[in-house]
Length: 491
Image (tube, rainbow, N blue to C red; front, side, top):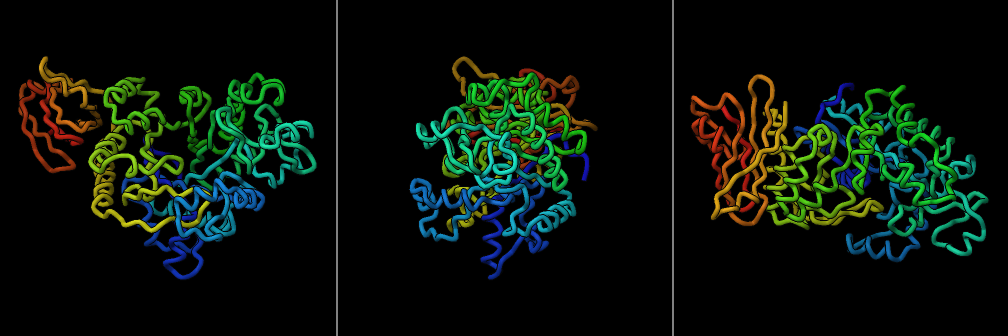
């Protein structure tokens, strides 16, 4: 499959949990090769362009042993899954033993079958890559010690939480600069020329099995951040950044593969410049979850070209379930916003059904929760309408809502428009607050005056007829109840 859409909609699936659910329902082991057509149909919502099968790679027995011995982790598992059983804990998908599809999921042939099933539905496949670290029993530990940040027996004695004896040497545990080391992984050296070559080779192999790659904590490999994290232990920083060197090699073999960076610390623009197609928009997530319309609006003033390469989301496997953080009405307003903004969009399996418990990625089972069928139908309709009506086609523009001296509730309104080909246009207005909001929103299209316009709300079915001169200035008058929204199609 070639030619990604400019603004893909991605659906993330926890592979272990999903296949575990299917296996229990079938009364036998279900791998990726065994998933039925109806189950693929159920797992690929209308409007989704890609499925991210999170956690398909071979998990580490050594990492699993460390996980089972970690009482803090075990307590967190029992909190999420009160009836936890030993077989539920399968280890972290980000403690990778080898970049080979795990046998429990059907191996390489099972992964190929999954890709073919998705492609038959016009859906692309995204897989993970973890550039910062590998499991302590990864083959590189024995065969290629120069790929790692190495220490001494003195380091191990002085800081046993930061170092580990593995493969006859002392290696640093993987870490980022703001948290304690991760006890189940060992640190790769981003400054090592050999690692850069090995990374390019690994990514090329992954790209041969999928259509897109999501790179975990991608900013940790930026020269400046890596140097601040590891100091002299990593050696001198090379003149070239890690990602341009690696991505340049990858693009030569797989020019169509889409690269997504998990990114924090305002590193999105830099990672875009270094070759990533899309970067996580964590700032937008935080501001929407905080229900701060003014902060969201300010965030959306950024250059549209930059925004078109961000990945917008309300939850993923690292964030709490949105249903546990927002009231149902607020969640729907937030979802309309995410679904209609420029850039890529990410939805997480279980979000549509209103699940409130985020399963730890170490587990192959999650708690039973009642499905909110009404919410699921609403989400499915939202995605289908946005895709089917081409809501995000064409040129995006942030709109301003004006109020009156005695009524500034317009500050809680978010508004934008899309202008596509064949005169297709859409206007989105969201009241991101728990109070009623009114305002006037000039639409700014030059051909508005001189006729009446029929504005259909694609979500509610309501129709409004407005004078074109009024729409141009003073603007479209809106009066929205708390957390209400319009997705309007002017005709």
